[in-house]
Each structure stands twice: as structure tokens, then as C-alpha cells.
Image (cartoon, rainbow, N blue to C red; front, side):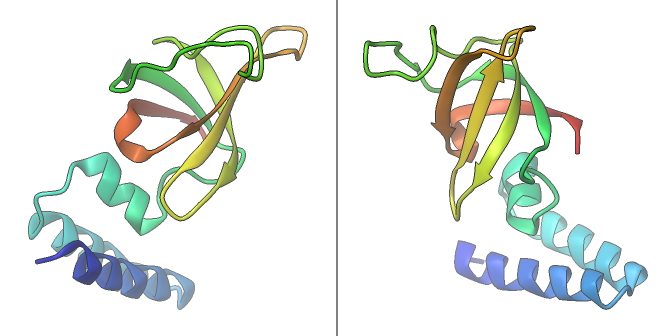
Length: 123
């Protein structure tokens, strides 16, 4: 099954949720996950169950080397263990912002689902 068909099934899952038919929604989600070889985070991302705007995540691992330079926003690049807020969600990416205890931005980067393993801390 191609990713396009996977996304079409994901859309039917979201429709089932909107219709408040939780039993069908849960069955559809597990059916999609069981019949595909996509990583769980990417599957949940496609289903809209992860990466909502203003969700808080923790970086468990980085698969992309983010380089800090003078054009970067903030004072450093992302690190494993950082806690960040999703400030914007796009079709295939999202903006993550990490701030210090005073609210100053440490970094602001665009992430694709494959760039890092994230743990959802708060929805």
C-alpha cells in the first residue's frame, strides 16, 4: 500500500472521530497501523494524533544534524533532552521552539517527522 492510500485511510479515521464513533475510529487506526510498515510516530503523525499546535515534546534522539549559525533564531541548536513547544504545524513539517526558564528562545527550527524521535509530554 502506498503512502497516498495510507493518508486516505487516515482521513477516514479522522472523519470517524468527528462523527464520535470511537469504536470505528479505534478499529480503523489499528487496521491502518497493522497493514503498513511505516514507523509508529509517522503513522500517528499522519493520523493527526501527534504534533498538534502548542503540544509540548521532548527530543529523545536527533536524526538530523542541526547547525547553529549567525542566521539561526535563538542562541544554540537543538539537543537531545530539550523540551520544546510545537508553534506551527505544516503538511509535512512543524516548527519547534525551545525556551529557557525566563522565556527567551534558545532555538526555533523546522522539523520533519524523520528529523527526530520525539516524546509527547503534553497535548
